Length: 207
Length: 207
DNA sequence: TCCTCGATCTATCAGTGATAGAAAATCTAT
DNA sequence: ATAGATTTTCTATCACTGATAGATCGAGGA
Image 1 (tube, rainbow over the protein chains, first blue to last red):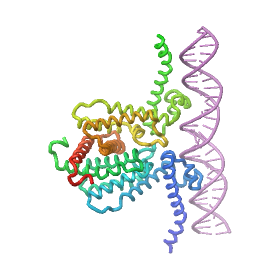
Image 2: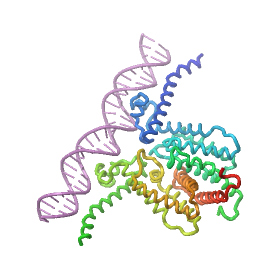
Image 3: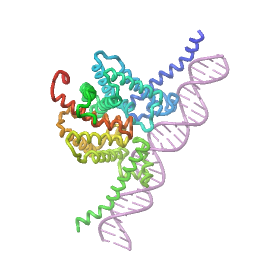
Image 4: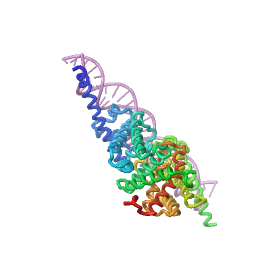
């Protein structure tokens, strides 16, 4: 009675605030998609959630703080898109993982900019938000480990391949699949290279 | 006398204006590197070139137009960095070409953002500036043709590899060489993949 | 029922890009 | 050399931005 009483009485205010904050973040994404990430107007945003502009500061401390909320939200979306288990052998799991990442990039330009490009002057994710990013990179590393890739250089090269596919896709064929469909080829190319180098110095390759 | 007279009399005004415009663009890059691309203040910029803010509008029509001048300037820098001839066989020439591109990206974050990322809301390069970008991509295509790569899919994959190296380098190791030094490996990986696929359908690969 | 404190408001600030129109500087031609 | 024309720069101002101060309102707990 005592504990549940406390929890319930504290809840309603906090619950409404959390719900409204979620609405704010959702509308902020919508505005960003319409006008551009840096062009979000707090007055526009406030109007969309039935508030005046200064009232927003009850939900975040600054515009950068709003970007931080969106950053964390974006990485949660990424984890939700990338984490679900995939059936099949490790190679196939890696291919599908890559395909999901490139697909994720192409779905939302401004989300891609906020998560993967340093596009807002002065913005840096908070430690709490950054933890979500690290969580994602750990997930990627584990997918790679499943196919036996653990060397830092190999991981660096792999990260470049994936980010390159995503970047080209969104920059030159937004909404299409011109680079998404290269996912399997690029993974095979990468795995063949790792194999070839593991097979060792047969003359070319590493100097 | 007549023609040279005309040319000389018209020149001084235009020459001074061109020189001042060059100064403005140079100072704009400097401000962008300090404060961020989107955070350039026209009043700050004007103060640096001994003008008041409205006077800048004699040199460009809007802030987007300033970005366009910087965009063109950036691609001229890229062409200057990438175009010089390279000695050696085609493969070596391609490796060095890629190394130069990745190096170019890492040298200047905001330049990379303006040239390769759609970071300024609403900004699109003018046809005249875009022509410089096309010129660069033609140069890249010719380097690829030298090693026998002309298929659109191959070019797409190559572009993803290079942009991925540049992106990771500037995002995660600005000023360093963690991805720059993977240039040769990535080119060899790519060429081996093209060869392997040219060697044809030995069971895996294309479906 | 009172009263506290959280939520929202109005009013205002300095700074932004952009425009209008006056003043100053420079070149051209008589 | 001087008058006229043109270019360049200026001051003053606009609407809009993110942010802050302080008053007002309203729901929750005693």
